[in-house]
Length: 434
Image (cartoon, rainbow, N blue to C red; front, side, top):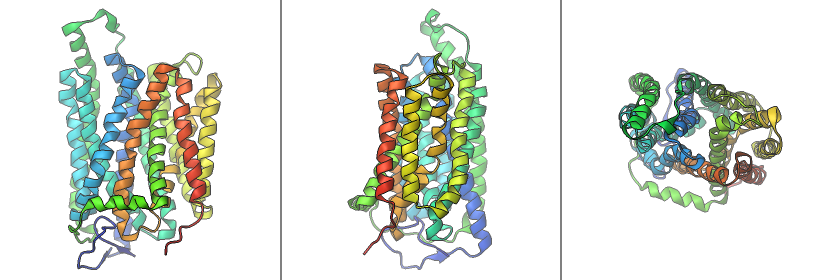
């Protein structure tokens, strides 16, 4: 087995031949390294679902305004993905992973001045920097895990790696709900104004600061460990060529459709996850309190974790396209059930979407990237740009909720899942390239 150029697939070759991983032990340790990266960036991303109700309460935001948390976070994918692919091409996977981890550390530390300012916009800036680091790490992780094994099992392997992403998204929200939402002060902000309101917001924001300060320390330690093991993967730099040539890949219909579906999938997944707390708190759903509803976010992401472990096996024996189409149909159906019912059925059908979300990202990614060969990292950069759907679809969903209701707003992610169904059916057969 060989690992190619540092981006996984630069559009221009260096004069050096692709360098092999020196031993099977290196392949195994590199897989563990990638699994750890998936766990870290998945967990930190899922904390947004807990921060949204916290900031909504502190700054008295509408649903659309609260969704700016996701917009600021996922906008980084659009801005940073192609530059990240260029960094990978120039410096290699391991060193770029260190850059990403240190950028994440900086983003976490920016929560300190954000809390001191007592301004919502400063939290958005900190989240953008944090997400920039996560984007860099994800541009590294997706193509790398696809390469660490046979090409015909890439979809299964990426699904298995995504299960560790889901493990992080299961653990982090549960702990975050206790730490962040469990401390919501029972103060009527309507009685505060001016300096008193600013002081209240700054004080209440400290719990968020403590959470992200702990994450910053952990990320710095991980970055140091990755740096010490940076030579386990033998790579050759390929600085030649413009990364902007990657846009030429969009002329390939299957890749273009798949990239669109990444936009739709991430947007739908994030929109649903962002609404769970407020949705489950409604009296005609489960009527839960802040902390209890926040803990249920772990069930949504936990379903994705279970589904990914199972999906890694299913995708070895079933057509990935047909599995994806089935998952899209079920997700849209669950949203319909939730929107048209009340009580436990409405709540649990929404949470169950996490289970069918499980195989979507890795399956769309591998179906879209099939046959890209040495241009895999360029494809990964463009696909990661499409994760900006997490900035746009939740915002549209928030506007829909403000104009109608949370139930009616579920129609927005439902349309996304129906289009994913179409892509799965379109890509159900292996791609034949001339």
